Image (cartoon, rainbow, N blue to C red):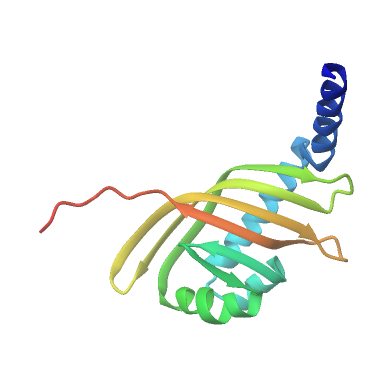
Length: 160
């Protein structure tokens, strides 16, 4: 019985390894360059420049809420936010990409982000963590299929 359970455990671990693999540095380099282009499009504050980065059926988990689909996210969340921001600088760092499957068309990415901007006369300096699921389209371009961000807790300011 022990041998059988051990054999099953080994098979299960091998199967997991085929599903999510640590990517060679080339994938992380490729995704890091892609994220730099994404950050530049984001900094432009023009949603039409961001459209090529998103899958039409993207899901966004942010701030305890969910946006389903690029059009809804663009029109009701991201677009209005970008219009309010001045001096926007958005960056990613500590990017790690991992292949999902064996065909090179899906990856999950972990990264840290930082967003600096001025909104309504108030300076914003936010940072946090992000996990992305990327898929390649028919033209081999990465698209964000799912994004989940969490911001770092800000220190509590004393009452005025």
